[in-house]
Length: 273
Image (cartoon, rainbow, N blue to C red; front, side, top):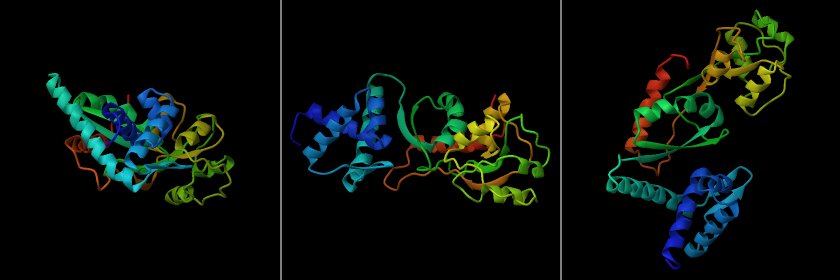
């Protein structure tokens, strides 16, 4: 491979971060450089290899076939180097694990529990990226039981009372219909605003501007603080969160530990403190 070895290694490292983050901007933040430096390193690597590595789309970076072939090799190589360096330095062995999660799951369930994971598995370094509706996470972990949550300022005693308030909607059009069917109540006309983020729905509901149908486990802290209340016990389960692993990635010991920990944590129904 032509070019100075140190420059090529820097470009390869930049490629690994950009591919993992799915964004030159987020890669620049992780590497603590300007975005232009990331773009320059990727362009240099593409020139050296004679291939295109990324296509830019409105949804973010899309890896080409060449990048998809290179990325798992780079990821494994960097993790192997880190483990060898730890061993040579006499420190505890570590293994990096890259995971992506939808923002609602990351903020509402995973991040509040990461300290417990770190304490249980100090040898695993988690690298967390968040995406909206692009990745699914938590295999055989949390089902998604949903129930109305609203500001304590709203006077709601029965499901029929909700007709007097705005029902906030997500991009999943059948959620309210399914919940009212579970509550054995006719669903009113749905004319409320549509938001593409559960966190946004919770924020609007907290201000008293409507009622949101939300995953109970994701908004425990809102309930504990009293920002939101849960008027009814009735829930409806609409899908699950899944932990997915690309076919070209190996299932490492860290992956297995994370999966087992998530299963245990999901089965533990104790509320957050």
